[in-house]
Length: 117
Image (cartoon, rainbow, N blue to C red; front, side):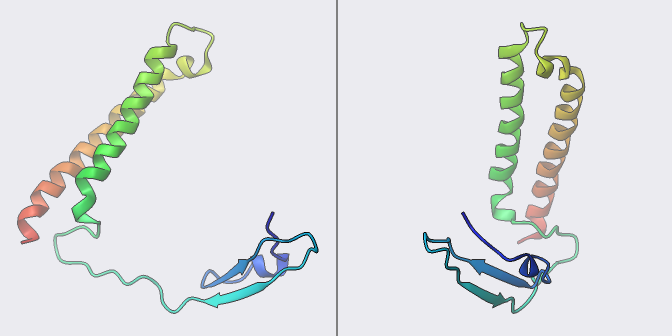
């Protein structure tokens, strides 16, 4: 169990309060830590600010997640009382839309490959 006084929860995002676990004596230690900077993005014309070297792996992971949802449906579709099965027609549309987005991102990555040289 962790304890952070309510007064510290509303601090600006730049301040992070690190709370230690309360031991049996209920003592706590608060160590405010100041953020030094916000992320700095360097963007080249025509290129997305993404982790390019991991694009293929990340897209593959997302597509695998979509496949696992489809597999779950295939296992449960015989049960007409299952709310997941009842929602499938709408979910199937969303999966198709997501798959299209990921495939389009894969195409963008292929185009950017030439520009990143």
